[in-house]
Amino acid sequence: MIRYLIKNYLKMMGRSPVNVLLFIVFPIVLIAVLSSAFSSLMESYERKESFSVGYIMEDDSIFGDYMEEIKKIARENDVTFKAYDEGDPDKLMKDEELESFVIFGKDDYVIYKRTGSPTEGMITEYILTAFMRNMETYREGMMRGMEVPQVELDVSYPDHMPEVDSIDYYGKIEIIYFVWCGLICFAGIIMAEKRYKISQRLLMSGLSVTKIYLAKLISSTIIVSACTLIAALATIAMFGVKWGAPLKSALVIFLMIVAALCMELMIYYICDNMVITIVISFAAVWIAGFFSGSFETYLFSSHPESTKVLFPIYHGNRAIVELASGGRSDYFMSSVIYSLSMIVGCSILALIAGKIRRRGRA
Amino acid sequence: MDMILKTNDLTKKYGSKIAVDNLNLEIRKGEIFGLLGPNGAGKSTTMNMICDILRPTLGNVELFGKDLHKNRKEILKKLGYIPQDLAIHGNLKAWENVELFTSLYGIKGEALKTAIDESLEYVGLLEKRNEYAKNFSGGMKRRLNIACALGHKPELLIFDEPTVGIDPQSRNFILNKIKQSNEEGTTIIYTSHYMEEVEAICTRIAIMDDGKIIASGTSEELKKLVVDNTESITLEEVFLTLTGKKLRDY
Image 1 (cartoon, rainbow over the protein chains, first blue to last red):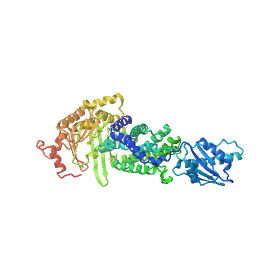
Image 2 (cartoon, rainbow over the protein chains, first blue to last red):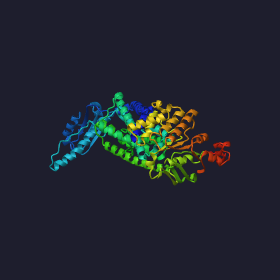
Image 3 (cartoon, rainbow over the protein chains, first blue to last red):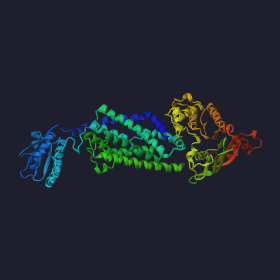
Image 4 (cartoon, chains in turn green, red):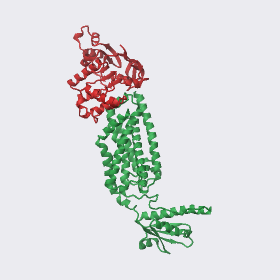
C-alpha cells in the first residue's frame, strides 16, 4: 500500500521549509539578480516596431525581378526597403536612418548591419534568406507547371532569434535550473531513513524495491511540481514573465522534474550515500547549466552547439524560451524524448542497483 | 508446542569474518525467548536474517513451518520487528507514524484507523496521537517505536534492545507490555544487555558468542551450568563466566 507511504512522504516534505526556500525563493532571487545583470545585453534583442532598409541593385542582378515581391513581404512585416542608386552603405545608414543596407550584386548580395541594431540586421538577413529559399521552391513549381501559392514570411518571431528580454529569459531558465535540484526536497527523509534504519523497516514489511522507489519518485515529483508551479506563478506576478504555450511548457517542465528525480535517485541507489549523491548531482547540474544557458544566456554563448545539445537542460531551456517567444520550438520534441529516455533509463538502473543491494543485504 | 522459528545451520560471513556460525535455533509458540551476547556476538545479524533484512551466506530460516526465503511475503506479514534504532519519522505525528508502518501490511480504511488507535493506546500514547514524534521524550519515542510494529497484529514480535536509554518507568511499562503481549498469544524474541530484564521476562534464554550459541535454557538451567546453588549467582555472573571478561571492541 504505497498510497499511505506517498501521503506521509508528502506530509514530511511539505513540513520542511527547505523545500519552499529552495524551489520558490531561490529561483526568484536568482531571476532578479541575473536579469538585472544581463538586462542591457539582452535589450539589443528587442526589435523596433518598424524600420527601413536601404539597397542598391546592380543593373545585371538576378534579384531585380524579385525586388517588388521582397518589398511587399517586408512591408507586411513593417520593414521598408528604400532604393538608392549609389553611395557608401555606412554613410547612407547613418544619414538616412536606415537600420541595415543591402547591395544586390549579379548573383549574390551583401548585407550591412548598422552598429547598435543587430536585431534589425538579422531580420533583414532572415527576410532575404527565407525569401530566396522560398523562391527556389516557387521557381521549381513554376517550371513543372504547378500552381504554387504566393510566398509568405512571418518575421515577427524568426526561428533564429526568440524575442526575449532578460526577465523573460531568466524568469524561465532559473526555474528550470532548480527543477534539476529536485532531490534536495527528499534528501533529509532519505538520510533519516538510512540513519534510523527506517528503510530496513520498510523492506521487512515485504514491500518491494520497486514500490519503495515509486513511492519516493511519485511523492517528490508532486512536491517539486507544486513548488515549481508556485514559483512560476510568482514570476508572473512579480516580474511579469511571459510563459507561452502553457500545456507544452508544462509538459516539458514536468518531464524534466521526473527525469531529474530519476537521475538523482539512480545515483543514490548506486552509491547508497546521500552526501555523495548531492555532490555528484549538483556538480552535474551545474556543469549542464553552464553549457545550457542557465547562467550566461545561450543566445550569446560561445560554446559549440554540438556540446550544448548533449545536456537535457539545454533542450528544456530552448523549448521553454522559444515556446514563450514564438509559440513553437524545434527543441520541444527533443526535450520530451530526452526526458522520457532519462526516466526509463535511470529508473531501470536504479532498480537494478536497489535489487542488487537488497540481495547483498537480504 | 508448535515450532514458530527454526534456523538450520544459519551462517553469515563478511569476507573472511564469520558473524554467525552454523546457528541452529528453535523457538516454540508462546515463548519469550531471550538472546544474550556481548557486542559483536552476532545477535543483531541473526535478528536481521530472521527478519529478512539480511540474506544468510549458508543455511536457512524457517518461520511458521515455512522457508522464509520462499514464502517471504506471507511470513513477513506475521512478523513484527522493533529495532534498536528509533525507526520513526520525527516530522510525522504519532498516529501518522503508526499509519505509515501499519499500512505497509495492506491494512487500510477503517481497519487502519482502528489499528492506529489500538496500537497507540497499547503503548499509552493515544492522548499524544497528534503530537510530532520529534517532540517526544526518549521513553515516548521507544513506545512509539513499538506501536509502529503492532498495528498489523504480528504473531511473532522481535525486540532488539527496546529499553536502551530510557527511564525506569518507561522500561517497566515496556516490559509489562511485552509480558501482556505474550499472555495474549504473541511469541517474543528479546535481545538485551540488561540481564535482569531478560531474567524477569524470558521463559528461555540463549547466550551467544562468536556467532554461536554457547548455552541455552531457562535462567535456572543456565545458572546450574556454573554453580550448583543457583541462588548464589546472578545471570550476569553466568554470562561473564561463559563469555569471559575480555572487552569486546567492535
